[in-house]
Length: 194
Image 1: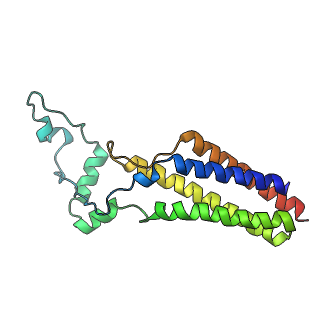
Image 2: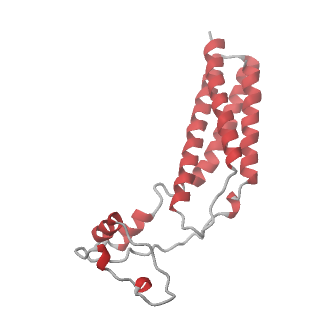
């Protein structure tokens, strides 16, 4: 059973490496310095229909912007007195450099866990199995966090700005293999550890 998990772990790692190799991750880094524009001031007591912007001034051939929702108007009214530093902090990512850290930590913890599982497979000390299981759990948590961070960044990105893209099939294959590896590793350590 431990050898099956070892082979499955190798397959999962291979799917992950292939996913990284076929992504545009290395080409998707934005410039290091970006300026955040402060939100446009909105009159707090003006109804949404009464505001006229230059794009909706009624000139023929002008593009019209979609009307702002009530939530956006309330948020802009509330945020109009924020200093620029607070505005920049609100628009900054939750944890700066989180994706870069996860790009490193997820594969490394998977490889270290694989090394411990390799030791468990050939020597069978119970401690190595539990360490490997803990590392596969950590690797799965880091992978899910990386996936969530990329999904969140993709939703916040403007329409024309390129970002990291991964093949959906490969991500599903890698995640499914990781879930099976996690389950079989837990069963193996519990059953063979007795």
